[in-house]
Each structure stands twice: as C-alpha cells, then as structure tokens.
Image 1 (cartoon, rainbow over the protein chains, first blue to last red):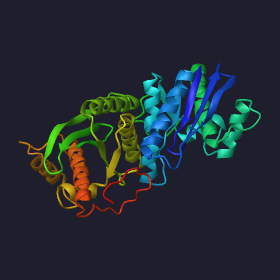
Image 2: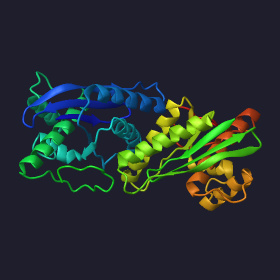
Image 3: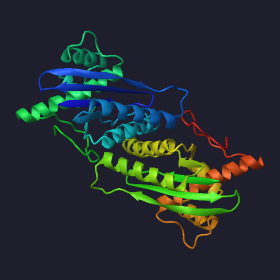
Image 4: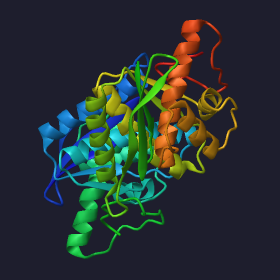
Length: 180
Length: 180
C-alpha cells in the first residue's frame, strides 16, 4: 500500500509518501511546500493546493493521511490552519484518494509508542522505521511521514486483529476513520 | 462593477452577486450551496469549491468579497469554518478574481449604518438596497449580498474621498484591504 501523509500549514505544508507491505516501509518521497511571506493568503492556498495535486498525481497513493487538530493557540491560528487543511483535503478528494485522519496522540502512539512523545522522538523513530541515514527534515516532512506510518500501522493492526488505535477525540465530521 | 459576496460555511455557503454603478445596485443572483449531512467532510469541500467555481465562471465578477472572521465559539468551529473559507478563497484565486475581506462590523456599518446591527436588520437593508420584493433567503445569501454591497460602498467612499471604513481588526494575513 502507498500512503501520502500531509502536515498542513499556511506557511509550510509537510508531505511524505510511504510505500509498505505492512511490515517494511519505504520512503517514496517527502518534503515541504513553503510559501513566501510576501505572497497573499489566497495565493498561498493556491500554491498548497496546486503542489499537493501535482504530488498526488505523481505518487498515486491509495490513501491520504492527515493529522486531525483539536487544539490551536487561538481562533485565529485555528482559522488559518483550517484554510490550509481545507485545500489539502480538496486536493485529495479531487484526486479520488480517500482521506483518513488521526489525532496527534494516535500518531505518537503508533510511531513512538507513547502518546505524549516529543517532536525529536518522532523524527528519530521515522528515521529508524524508514531506515534513513538522517532524520527527515524539515520537521513538517517528518510529521507528514509519521501520520502516513500511523495509517499503515493502523491498517496492519486491523488486518491482524491485534487491537486498534484509540482516541478520545470526537469524530462527527470525519468521513473515514480507521483504527477505531 | 460586479462584486460576488461569499458567506462560507461547511453546511451552507451563501453567495450573492451584485452589479452596481456605485449608487444603484442590481441583484445578479444569490443563493446558498448546501451540503448533505450524510456527505463526507472532504466531499462537502469539493461541492463548495466546484459550485463556487462554476458560479464565478458564470458571473465573472470584478472582485470577490468575503467576511473576515476573528470570532468562533471554539477552535473546532473555527477549524471547520476555515476549511470552507479556504476552498472558497481558492475558487476565487483560481478564477483570477481578487479577494477582499471585511469584518462583520464593517459590513454592518456599510449596510445598516450601525456596527452592531442584528441579522434581520441586515436582511431588511439588503432588500431595500437591491429593491427586492422580499428579503433574500436564506440568511446566508443575505449575508453574502451584504458583504458584496459593503465592498461596493467601500469603493464608492474611496472614489468620492468622503472617508473610509475602519476596523480594529488585524490585517496581517489579508492580501487586499480596501477602505483602510
């Protein structure tokens, strides 16, 4: 299976595509879409949408995995993040790829084994799991790879019937939810 | 000039297009894009984006006006609204139409003359200003027409040099801001 992870943000959107047979994960590609501070906000959204659409067309993943967010420092940052997530989700649905969402705690548990893991621990585990010489950089790319790996682990857990990832987060507006 | 107003929301996105010579405003069309509660969230975003893109292609406005939001009941509702606003802005920028934003207080002042006007007062004034037999319905369509009229008034004020709309809201991520 091939999973395309996205860590959206209006300034920098991380992405990471992982191919896996369920136990061995291989990095397809990863990186970050950066937008200039001088660019207008709508143009930033256009860049994120256009670049993600091109990447999805190139990678042709089976699913897109994205972190669900229930916390932001304030309404303003939640709104900005929402805009970026909106155009990222749109790119996925336009590419006819199902979107799955995981909470930050689920991603950390799946990748590090601990729901309150720190960012550097995620980067380190992503490096190990993908057998990379160095941790993926920038950290947005590592976060995107982590959510992709989380989805792969979730599918494997379901297939093996060994349990499921759990979350206390609400799911009323998630359309696909594996691992629950 | 022709202005296309948008009042975004994940369940219902109001729109309203107004043509004006600066003093006489004519309704081009208005309505609301509704999404089914059974539809997945990414599919709702696709519907909003696709329908707005088609409407912008049909109406060919000179600008898109949208309400800027700095308040939401919680982070969750801000995020959801952000997704809808994101794909609405994307539709505008893909149609090569500049996006302008106004705070709710600016819109109320421009349409009703009072920054804390109630929803029914806005509907009533939109009806009067557009010489409609009944107030526009649903209220999302009236809100979208109000922001379009606000932009028309703002341009007229600037052209006449008789003052400018004011707002205390921050503008760091607004790319176009008339009336300041």
